[in-house]
Length: 424
Image 1 (cartoon, one colour):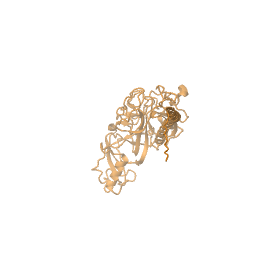
Image 2: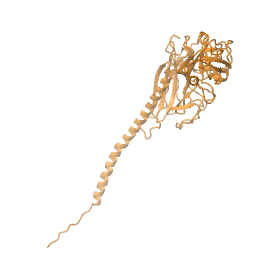
Image 3: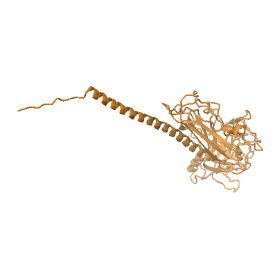
Image 4: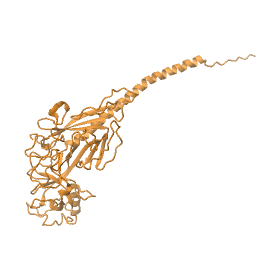
């Protein structure tokens, strides 16, 4: 009987080294393919991110600006309230319409800006725009109006029956139409217009709830008699004090005879603050809206900082520019390539407000806006693959930032204002 046995044999050192070398070669080849592909995918992601941010911001801003409209359809040219560049601060009664051009004095304050220089108002070099949009507009006529025409801190009565026959429903509808603030019990800024083209802001400061408890069922004849039909109609007695409202049309308050009140007009302000596109429902106020935190040069955009009255729309927006389009096609604050002719001559770089005859660069002549947005990627490209470049120029703004590895995307859109006649 015989037995056979085998002598098991392992891997030699040379064989192990060959295998390890082969694996290393394979891993190196995989890495050589994978990491560049990953970097390329990251670069593409950052490019798409900048593009989507710019287009999203432009679509939203352009939609808002297209809705900007003059509410005074009684005269032509329309009043300048679709876009606000200057307003009168105070309650001085004026019979004239002086020009507000940003040169100081005259009681005018600026509410739209071209190439901001004060970093507390917005990111330097960007623009600020304040404009009005109708929001369920309601036209009201007075059933009682001061015969003297001096209506500062006076009582008026407005015909209103949208909630009738219910008294409570009518009161609620009136509150909603006028934008009654539940904290201050004041209305939002409304617009008072007349057939002569005059306009001013109108703000209810006392709703007189007790007197108006029966606005439908038993309106008082001494306040609610329609001046045309002589019939008693549902109405609301209110107190308005333009002096308290502080802001008025350029030139201050004027004498109005049986004007029309537009409720449902909403003002909006747009700006860029430290990489965030922001919106305010209301008129920009340089005294209270100087709340854009200072940002060091070259610093990354910070997380959003909450500010009273402002809402964040989109991050990584670097530049916001508005060019004012006049009927002859000129853009006085348009591209730098236009040379001297492309420079707005007013001290503030925005159209003037008011004046008779209408000045050449009056806001009443503006028929549209060109909106330009520059957005950048949330992070720079790391590891090469992108040529460092500075922020691009937009309209009449040339940024001073140094070259970096961020991807940027710039896009523009032209928006015509509603109710504007190109003949003016």
